[in-house]
Amino acid sequence: MQTLLALIAALALASIPIAIGWRRTYGEAGMARAMGIAAPRKFFDPQKYALQTGTGLTFNQIAFGILAWTAGGLLAGLAIGPFAAILFAIAGGLLYYGGMSNLRQEFRLRQTKDILRSLGVIETLLGQGRPLTDSLEEAAKAVGPDGRIVLNDLVVRMRSAPADQLAAAVREWTTAWDNPGVDMTATALLSSLESRIEASPLIASLRRTLSSVVEVLSLSRAAAKGVEWQARFLALFPP
Image 1 (cartoon, rainbow, N blue to C red):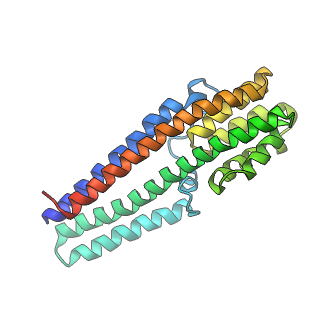
Image 2: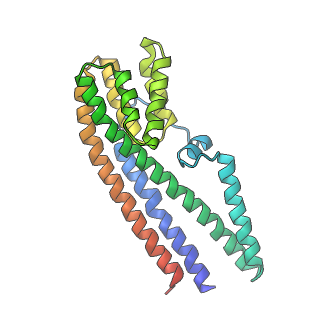
């Protein structure tokens, strides 16, 4: 029983830096919303949450997985007793939810890194006189699959929008993806589209800023991983 209680406490401890660390760095990077150029985000969007896990699962499938792991823990704990069954059920649900949260954070970090890589391509193509939409499309082909999904979505929205609605298409893009790289890229694009500012210098400045953000996010993920391994050690070898 002592081992089980230590496991639950360790799992709860491991979730703290993952949740708080990303939110803190994301808040620092949320330039678009701080400037009031992005629409308010819903308190919770189930489909967006499922999309950001990068697993291809729907929210209903994720919810079913949590229920299945909770039920599995409950059944396993019944062999020991009712109190153990409750603890096993909680542990099962936490294990599944923690795994999905970890996948979600890793997916978003990979997206941000891909967006950072794409900015160099965009800057080069804009310097050669290529249109902004064409530059975005070519940049999407030069990055990994995680960032390609985000950039292709932006290209599709911009190509399908009238010339006077490009800024609105970029704003819709920011609300569809919960990612600091998306918000910061949208800030530069909106400044170029609405203020008629040349995009190339903005992209160059954004690339330097986003590079620092990626470094902070990577350090936060590394710290969260360290606490996670400490939690696993405590679960296996409780004090």
